[in-house]
Image (cartoon, rainbow, N blue to C red; front, side):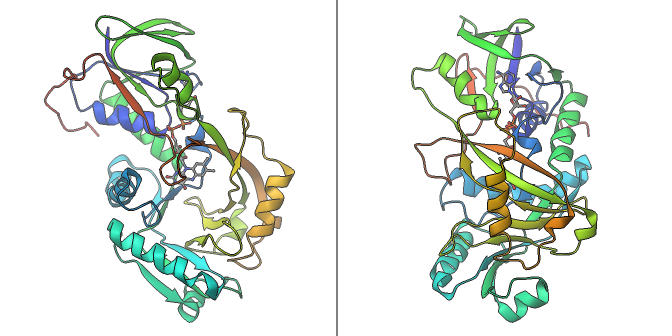
Length: 345
Ligand SMILES: Cc1cc2nc3c(=O)[nH]c(=O)nc-3n(C[C@H](O)[C@H](O)[C@H](O)COP(=O)(O)OP(=O)(O)OC[C@H]3O[C@@H](n4cnc5c(N)ncnc54)[C@H](O)[C@@H]3O)c2cc1C
């Protein structure tokens, strides 16, 4: 019997695998795809959020701020690309001033360091391609960007070096309770485990509903993007968000750690958990919105477009609705407790 089985090798499953690799436990990650980072973790905005927009008092607010503080040291320790480029939430109508102030106050309450509101003159000096309509922005100097592949692979490699086993091409198809824990049916045979961690992203509801009468539903929310060539590098240097307000929610324009520019995403609820194809309508929406905060976005330099799926729980508000990994233990009082050695790398 395995001590801990983690279902899913996205950024959540790999981060958990690395964390539990500090303990003397037999840990197995089961992933239905052929490698780590094949799900949502490979298709997102790559932002290390500063933590100003998550609802004050929420777990997300706490983890955003803590994660943002931890990321510089983690990137050095595990050697993955990270850049502290700062972020700007741009307001394009004076009518939205109360919303900008509210965001600032929420960020301060969440403990985000260095937040301030910058007015147009300073904004233009910081970002010469800021749109002519831009009035002011919330500046978060702790905002950053990361390589999502680099992060996920680095976490997985460190976990593997510390003894965690990864088994790919293995889909968990059923879960049942046993006396000592759980029995998982997979496409490559059965596995017994004392503890199961559900980190299956948009499929976490399917696994959850195999063991709980308290059914949950995860709706995929698709985000479409353009990725621009290196020749567009420098068009913006900060991550530029639009303040949700009079003109809708907006899209971001941001540099990537590899020297590209990313533009997007949309937020379209769909039913298909495999629906990662972009649509003309989605890309048209990004095209229409991106000029609101940044002028002359060089979309002709597009080298590819892609989409990712956010796992959303429809009954909850968006700041708390994203699904987070669940832990099932055989007996809550008997975790695999062992002295925590430092990670080997
Ligand atoms: C458009 C968009 C933009 C985003 N932007 C940001 C951002 O800028 N910053 C940020 O921090 N977050 C962002 N996110 C959120 C972030 O990408 C996700 O929270 C994160 O990637 C979720 O990781 P995960 O490991 O939980 O899920 P996933 O990466 O989806 O991993 C789940 C894994 O489980 C596997 N799996 C599923 N079912 C089974 C099964 N039955 N058996 C075995 N394996 C299974 C899947 O194959 C997959 O590999 C964004 C998301 C989207 C979609």
